[in-house]
Length: 309
Image (cartoon, rainbow, N blue to C red):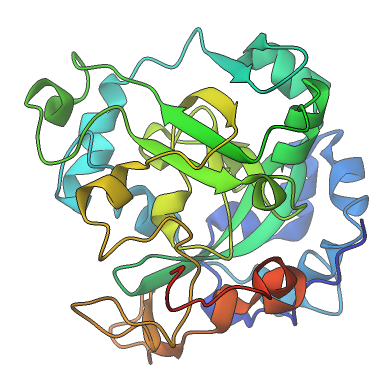
């Protein structure tokens, strides 16, 4: 499926690392990745074009490494980086089960060999009202699901994070949420070509605090839908009960599509604060579906988005 991606993202809105300051240095660091980058036909216009050098202007990776929502470790964003280093990510496997012909357990190394990495530059919008733009590396979730042959009875996807109470303080305390962290998508959302299983960003493997070794990225939804450290994927007949929807269903809907017309019960979603090194950065007007309406609005054409928020 060809994706006519949205308009170019201004360089001033890109959250980036030094490696992306110099495109040539980045491509060199990728080695065979030159082919990977250049083959991204729907996305390459957002990367590395000599006509769009501003897209590669840097914003330090430190902003992303040190500002994380990862409640298994801490409710304080600034503490997650340090605490997450105790997470065990090797070896790692992902179990796929449920309404499929071929339930399978994939070792991470096999997944990464089987599904070549692609580059995706996506906006990332948190339900709290801040945002960033991240260059991810990964492969479409659809590729993995097709490999296990979904049955016609598979209508939803349930994703489960790792549970490591010895490494995750809030699991051992049974704090706030019901663990392990769980999320869900409708099958057409899961099969959409924008939906990515990310194993890296900024040209290198994911940091532990950012969801290593494998996380979901759904760019038109609020960030809490993009579950980290995935160990299980289950295809279901009915919608799963997800972590935040279970905790506060009036505040965190199952769909969680970015929608400035549907406020959170306690704050507006009309605008967002861009992560930036600047002392003062103007708030950005939030776009419907985080700017990806052209690609995904048809998925919800028959739905009342105020009810199915």
